[in-house]
Image (cartoon, rainbow, N blue to C red; front, side):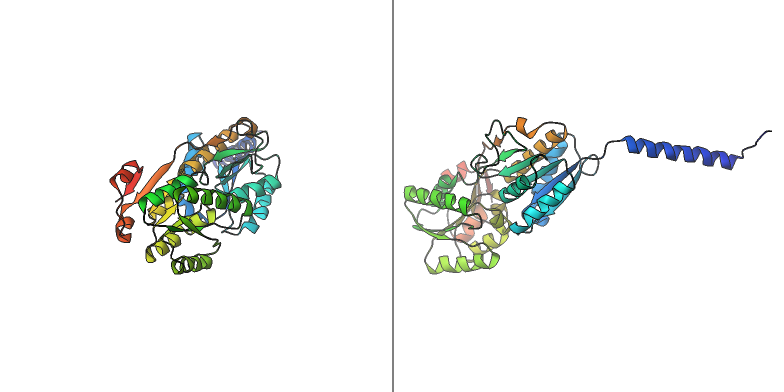
Length: 332
C-alpha cells in the first residue's frame, strides 16, 4: 500500500524535526554564567564605574547579555541589607560575586559563602580585614584589589595645606558606621595634622542631614578648610558635599577624583574607575577557570592629584604654579 504525503504535511514534519533539533541543541549548551554584583549604594551614582567593570569583563571576552549575565543588588546605603542580598546571590548559585568599593559587602559575601569566588575592591588592608591570608596567596574563596584611599591621608592633608597655607584649623569628616576603620582614619589624620601643624575639628556625619549639620558646626567653630575622609557613603553624597563646600566657601580635599568632577576643589588618591575595571578583569579570569586562591591581591601603585581651578577661583584661592605642575589633571 502506497501512502502519499502532501507538500504541506512534509514541510510540517521537517519543521517539527528542526524545532526538536534546536531544542535538543540548546539543552546541550552550557548555561550562561552569572556574575553577582553587590553594591552598597545605588546604580545611578556609579554609571562610569559600572562601565569600567563591564570593560574589565569584556577584556577577558565576556559581554553582558551575550555570554554572561549580571545580577545586580544595591543596598541604597543601608548596610543592614547587605547580608540578605549576599545570601540571595548565593542561593541563585552565581559563578562569582563582585564587591568593588564595598568592604561591608565583602564581609557579608564571605559570611554567606566559603565556596563561591568573591572579587573585592577595598581601600583597607585585606589581610588585617580578614579577607585573605596574604596578598600573594589569598588561600580562600576571595581575592581582588587593594586600592588605597586611607593610606595617603598624610599626603592629602599636606596638599590641602599647601593649597591653603593660611588655614590653621581644619575640619575632618569621618563616617563612624564602620568603627574599626573610623578609628584607624582618626589616628592617621591626627598624626598627619601634627606633622603639618594644623588643628583638627573632627566631625562624624553619617546621614545627609548630619552632613548639613556638620557644615553648620564647622563654620560656627571657625574651620578654614575641610578634609573629607574616604568612605562609600560620602562618595554617594559627593554632589551635596561639593555644593555645600562651595556655598560655605570652605576649601575641601577629597579622596577621589569624582568629587572634583562634580565641583570639589581637589582630590588625591587612587582611581576608583581603574579599580572597578580590574575587579571586572578578575571576575572574567575566574569565569575562565582561575581560582581566587591563585590570583594575588593587586595593589594600586598610581596616585592622582586632581584640582578644579574653576572652584579655586570661585573660592578666591590662587593655586601655585608648582602645585599645578604636579597635578595629574587640572579642570580649568
